[in-house]
Image (tube, rainbow, N blue to C red; front, top):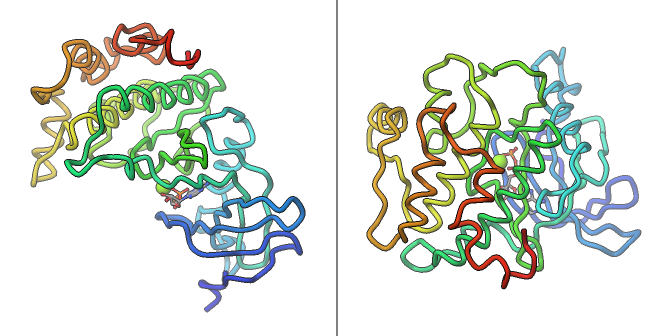
Length: 281
Ligand code: ADP
Ligand code: MG
């Protein structure tokens, strides 16, 4: 009871008129909404209020607060912005920038991929967002296609900091992420640097965009983990030598030897044609 209370036409706090469902993840549902004050469309990410219903203590309170605290620290043109938080008895709502263009992966062609030039265009935007987050002491830890959205102008927006972490100088031990995008050092459970983990998953995203399939994949999960652990992947024939070179450095199973976001930005494949690209760098 009360789990499914958001309804189209409902107005939150006299200001946000809810529209249809845009998407859902493990923790929340995301709705289109109109800000009746400004006339602008926004996205509203609604969580069941962990304070509602019997006793609480589910642990969700802390994670929603952490996601909010992270979003408040970030202001970047390729990161979804949090406008405000509304709490009702049953729900907690994040009012967010609308990513009206949907998911980045809607842009792949019929063979499931995009040209290397287009992949570079979005990879640049992704890396600039990730580098910014790291400079603010924030680690995303769940970079994958479903969390990479496009705004109305077609620019990339990194969304969903639900698994995000804030720097405290310690290594991390939480097992998190999505199997195909997870870095090998997370699998070995020895503590990891979350910045290196984000770089790894950016590499998996880049490979998928340009190849149309995952770099590490297998019908058996343990075999997939073995490939990740060994950093064993093969580039398709159409990848340029520069792209292969970059991917070898990004998908390096040794985190200490792996390239970081600054290093990626200096790589020739990343910089290729940068001057003609309107100062994206
Ligand atoms: P969860 O934390 O439950 O995974 P997400 O924040 O990833 O929730 O949102 C779930 C889905 O909702 C996303 O994969 C995306 O399709 C959609 N979505 C999330 N945020 C927005 C947004 N700001 N604009 C448009 N769609 C969004
Ligand atoms: Mg998500």
